[in-house]
Structures are given as structure tokens and as C-alpha cells.
Image 1 (tube, rainbow, N blue to C red):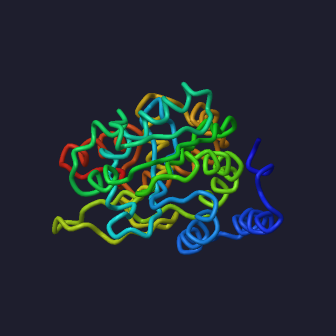
Image 2 (image 1 turned 120 degrees about the horizontal axis):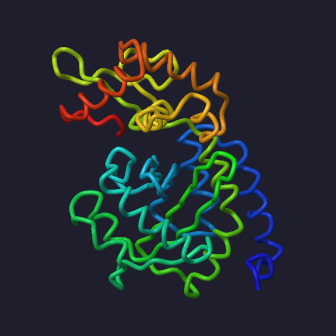
Length: 275
């Protein structure tokens, strides 16, 4: 029987309130409160990791929401999240895109590549986890949500799993209504070698590329035209052209080849283009 079949009359109200409140999330603070106050009632967790993008190319971004000290997006590097999420994404596809459990205490293979320090150590401390995702056919991007907890789930976790299956569209909606965090924007070092302040909007200073702009540049690197990139990302070629003009301005270059070379040069100097 599904979660709805097990809910009492007193529990239906909080469930409907949880669904309704997801529609008005408009900031990371509101997202945090909604996950802690509403979703927590049905899916106990300590860390939520949202990962989205093109998993086949490894072009993904992530966001971490948690009340634990040190469990912030900036503490979870791409080098940590991408292999971890990539393993779980493949497992999710293998399971027919259905929610599934992972258990670090049982030596789950997804945890084997973690180095045991910092954020990695924090993940190792989580006893249980639930994973589910959403296939985005229009945007050609997938979204994976990983909910981890430091205590066993009651009743074997079946209730939490059913709740995740039911609430995932609302969780996905809430995350999509929140802008990228500053950590997800590229920062070009200034002449003194320090990093300039981040301004995640279309008027950002030269060198600060948004996640979408970096995504477009990866397709430019592969030789795709504006029309082809638009079809891949489900946006118009005109929108791609506007992005390219902003990219040229931010990188202080004149064409696509110079933009690719500029990004390669910054990466070679040890300044990552995505954080």
C-alpha cells in the first residue's frame, strides 16, 4: 500500500501543507526551512544533495542543504560530488528510475571513492540514505536528489521511500525556484592574484561566468553552433547568441576560439571555472 493509504486524517493536513508550501519557496533560507520543517516530518534526513545537469558528460552542478555545521555547498567540491552522484545516478537508472536506499555502514560502493576527510568524512558518518531523481525530457537534463541521515530509518525506511516518491516533484519545484548559489559561479582572479567578488547575474564583471554560460561554452568547445546548442539546451538560438555576447564581454575576447582558449588557460593556471 502507498504512503497515502497509511496516512491518518491528522497526517493528511501536514502533507497537503508541505505540498502547498513548496510552491512559495523563493530563497535558500526558505528552502532550508521548508526541508527542515515540512519535508523532515515525512523523510527524516540531515543532508540533502541536489545534483543536476548532463550526467553522461559529467557536466553537473550541485547544491547542499543541511543544518549540520560544515555541510554547505562550498564545502562539497565537484571532485567529491560528481563521482559520488555519478555512481548513484547510474544505479538509479539501473533500478528503473525508482527511489532506492544506500547504507554507508554496509560498505555501499558509492562511498568507496571518498577520501575520508572534510565533507567526505561527513558523508561517511551518514548511516542511511535515500536517492531519487527526475528525468527532464525537455531540458535534456536530469536531477538527482540524495537525502542522507545519521540515524536508521524507522520501519526499514519504506514509509520514507514512499514519501520521497510522492514529494519529489515538489522538492524539485522548490529547488528550481531558488537561484544558483555564489559558489556556482566562476570567478576570475584579479591582477593581484585574489578572487574578485561574485555577482551571479547577467551584469557580472568580466570573467564571471554563470553555470549556464559555462555549460554553453562546453558545447562550443565541442564545435556546436548556436542553433545546435539551442536544440540541446531547449532554448532559442537567439538566446544562445545573447549568452555568447555576454561571455565574450566577461572574458574580454572577440570570438569563440579566443573564449575557449581563455578558459583553458585559466584552468591550466589552476583556477577552476566551476565551483
